[in-house]
Image (cartoon, rainbow, N blue to C red; front, side):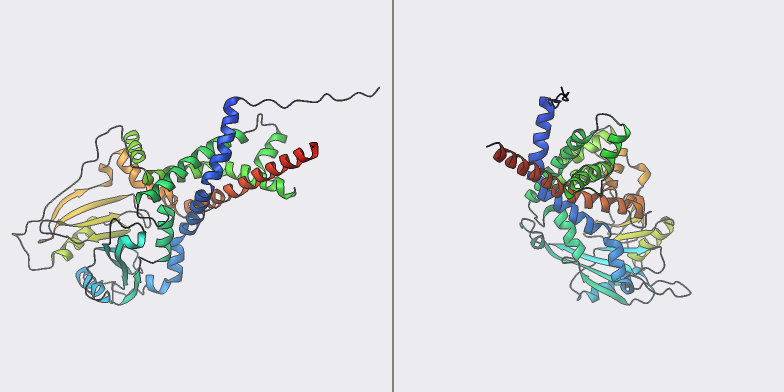
Length: 400
């Protein structure tokens, strides 16, 4: 008499596990298009600086003369305003310690703040690049319609100026965080024997499409989970004020908001030289180790000139600020990076963490591939679900 192997029954899943699996499926389907959108736009934006400077290399980089003598900033500012037609005022400037970089002069004016679409919320946003040694204008660009600017706003809110845009992005991101965690719970092997290790941590490229797709969803999702969580959580800082406030309180250990450094210009005092140039020269001496210095002219009777010294070539989190009297160029106040509490510093790092720039080029590469894989997860997940649905349907037909 032949012996038959007893049929092993599948271990019944707990109620919590069944609920988690059900939520993972349907929340994934609901948020899939938004997650795909965020992943794709994140990939495109990851190397925007490198791509832009490669395409416009002749505009962004200049020849350096032997004496390295730059033209006064006030003259360069006037040149930029002339290039813009003479009717727009430059509202922000960036100079670089890198000698072969063109300096940037920008102008921005908001449009209808209640407009539904992004383009209607901006009147104009222009950028002028100037050779700081010769005063030659190398580029005049309309940044309202600049490609990567549009990609950034698509990623931010679907080009929607109304809060509903960021609400859709925000809640879809929260769902994505849940999907990452629940996916880890569903995927994690019961034991880590070599057979299970190979099965769970490697993609079987020689297998059939169904198996490769399954592995790409689970294995690749595992490898980028930490980075994707970081991207998602930093995105939530912008999407929801309550989330940003929570991050600040947890990091700083206080509900007290950071103290603002303020000062007022004195219109009763004047000097014979141009105060704006005086302020810039002081900023250069003060920010000797800064990679770039941002200057913002004063607006209003008692407003001050702002100078921001960024210590990173591309990052924005590490900076000191100086406030100058607009009538004399006198230094009135200063706020240093080291004076910020942990919450303020962490919120300041948010953008650089989100785009990966805080770790330089390696960080941007990681952010790119994490975004690419994140964009693929809704697709591979849908294929897995559709295959199971089709299999159940065929099984039901066979039984009938």
